[in-house]
Amino acid sequence: MSFVGLFLSGAVLFLNSLMLLGKAEAKSVGIFNIFIGIIQIIIPSYLMVAAGENNWDLYNVAAIFLFGLTYLYVGVTVLKGLDGSGLGWFSLWVAIIAVVYMITSIVHFHDIVNALTWGMWAFLWFLFFLSNTLKKKIDAYIGLVAFVQSWVTLTIPALFYFLGVSNTPMVSKVWAFVLMLSIVYFVVSLFKLKFSFKKENSSQEIQAI
Image (cartoon, rainbow, N blue to C red):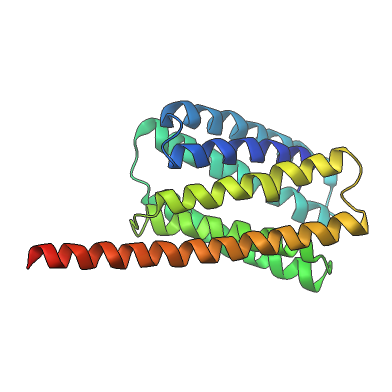
C-alpha cells in the first residue's frame, strides 16, 4: 500500500476513533472521511493505469481502494444517517480480503510486520461488521482499537518510510514487537469488556428479582 495512503489513513482512523469514543462530532468526521476517501480512489486509479498488467503492482494498488471505499462508505453513512448494515457486510468482505493479504505477506513476501499489520486491520474491519450488521454494542472498544491502530499501523510506519528508516532491521524488529504488544492489549481489553458486560447483566438480573 502507498505510504502516502497510509499517512492519510492514519488521520482518518484517528478521527474515526475519536468519533466512536464520543470525542468528535460525527458529521464533521464524516466529511473528512469522504474527502480522504475520494483522494484514495483517485490516486489508486491513476496508479492502476500506470502499473500496467503486473499482478503485484495491481495487488498493492487494490489495497488502497479497500481503504478509500471504506472511508467513502463510512462518510456517506454518517452524513446521511443511513442504516449501517450495508457498511457492516462490506466490512466483513474487506476483513476476509485482509486475511488473504496477511497470509500472502507471510507465504510470499516473508514479511512479519506487514502480516501483523494486515491481521490487525482484518480484526478492525470485522469489529465494524459486528457493530453495524450484528448491532453489537462495542463502539467504545472499536474506538479504542481504532485509536491504537491509527498510530501503530498507519501514521508512525508512514513517518518511518518518509524518514528512510522503515526497512532497517532494528526498526522492523522493534515494530514487530510493538504490533504484537498492541494485539495483546486488544485481547486483554476484549476480556475486560466481556467481564463488564457479564457483571452488568448480573446486576440487572438481581435488580429485576
